[in-house]
Image (tube, rainbow, N blue to C red; front, side, top):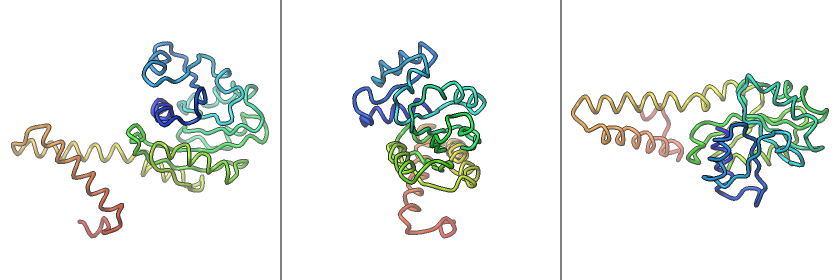
Amino acid sequence: MGTAIAAGLAEVGFGGDDGLVVAEPDAARRALLEAEYRIRCVEDAAEAVRDAATVVLAVKPQVMDGVAASLADALAPGALVVSIAAGIPTARIEALLPAGTPVVRVMPNTPAMVYEGMSVVSAGARATREHLEQVIELFGVLGTAIVVPESLQDAATAVSGSGPAYFARFAGALAAAGEANGLAPDVALELAVRTMLGTAELLLAGHTTPAELV
């Protein structure tokens, strides 16, 4: 997901020249990001965040405490910190950072890789409406972003964060049924996926409801 976010922002020129810096400890991945997406990459996370106005922590939940704590001394005063780690409340990250640091929690999903992501945004105790608007603009590059109270982040994650896996499983089952009835695999999959896509567009247009379609 971190790669999808960085690539999406780089694609639209978000931040301008050298406005986007990625900290990546793996040399091979640094080389890939620099070559394929023309993103400036560094090995040291503290170097990446120094003087940054906005810092996105795109790390696994199990390493969030260590990463946040390691960056505390390098953050610029007033820097906005954005976390996409599932299940980690803003209060936990705030406790690891300098007092008063604004933190915003975001749960994006995998369709962000094709700029059709659904991101759910929640403010921490120190984050203002302006901070939320900055994050909505940032993740809006990857699709759609909406604000919910942090108390509803887990519920939203169950729908949009986990949802793509359910849709993928359903598409696979629908395509497999088509194959079982004689369709070529590629034809069956296209029929299944485009039917899902068209139905989603129909529902988003507001012409009908899920209940009416079934």
